[in-house]
Image (cartoon, rainbow, N blue to C red):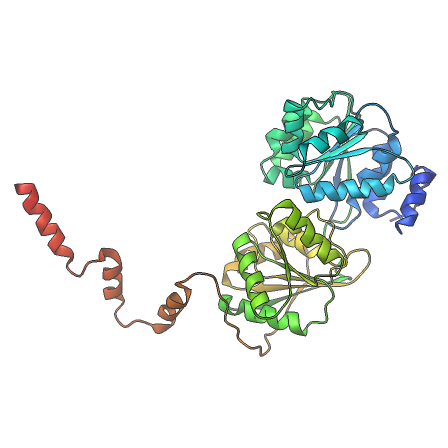
Amino acid sequence: MVKKTFTELGIEQNIVRALKEENIIEPSDIQIKSIPIILSGKDIIGKSKTGSGKTGAFGIPIVNMNNHSNHIKSLVLAPTRELAIQISNEFSKFSKYKHLNYATVYGGSSIKKQIKDIKKADIIIGTPGRIIDHLTNYNLDLSKINSFVLDEADQMVDMGFIKDIEKILNFTPKNKQIILFGATISDEINYIINNYMNKPSVAESEVNVSQDLLKQYYYNVKKQNKFSLLTHLLKTEDSKQVIVFCSSVSTVKMVHKNLISNGIDAGIIHGKMNQNKRIKSINQFNDVKQKILVASPVAARGLDIKQVSHIFNYDLSKDPQEYIHRVGRTARGGKKGKAYTLLSRQDKNVFSRILKEYNLKIEKLNLVDFPIIEFKSGNKNSKFRKRNFKSGNNNPKLKKRNFKSGNNKPNLKKRNSKKVNKK
């Protein structure tokens, strides 16, 4: 990659000054490839890994192209409220000396404040559902925008926003610039590209994580011993900031609850928490008030979570690419990181797909002795089921028959029913 400066890419000095104050001196690979295309006014498809400076890749040139005016110039769509807030914060940093006005629009916050902010906004950053709400109920005018950004487009499609995106696009002018960023290009995204974009250029940086900076490991461990191993690693690893990823909200809650009950302080974030609690969890983690964060996949993509030294995959989701997003939360900005996966039988199919689809070096580690800790699932019958599983009942047929009939005299009910029918 040829080294370039932001000035050489065509960025104004007042923006370069603001970037320098944020310790952003040299543009990243995706920024070098994207900024000139966006400044030229062409449509663009950007593909890059987590932590590659993606927000700056579209945010810096958009700020560069816009000045304060009496109408909205740009719209940025994001899949989650957290990402919308993060993008808005980044844009504010880029435009410190540019004096642009922003409206950050998402569900769960004051609609009146958003209406007020929109009236004086140059750039709007928001989630699809709330943008549609403003378009249909509060007279949001997008008829004069010159750029339309879809950030994490693949995630928006996965979340079912494809129709919302189309609806919003129909409120915008035909001659606008479309800037689309995503990790993958699905059929649905191809539909957007083919029907709404004008001969887009492609800017792509390295998709996989740097194996020089990120060391990846896995343990083969029985499912019932996962929590014990996790606890052992959290206590023995020399870590700074740690994210423990779980594939479901219920597992996030159980792991978090068990960590707390075993004296390990940890934060929590998942998709069913309300907005204020989620933002509070992220802020506490970023401010190093919380060292450990137990997270569902909502934290794997788009969120501004810094200085993560360790990732623990308590389990794996069915989508191999999510593994890349998870481990991409560490080894960022030239710093080293580690990722551990606790692999039980249920995870092995998707793990095989991860190894097949991505050229990753994930080292197997042998299990060491660690204390076994009781994992409380919250199910009242969990202990009973566990005893049955271990007991090896000598009369499985009897157990099966009782389970089906729930009656010690299964034929009695049948005989009685026949007599009733004869009458």
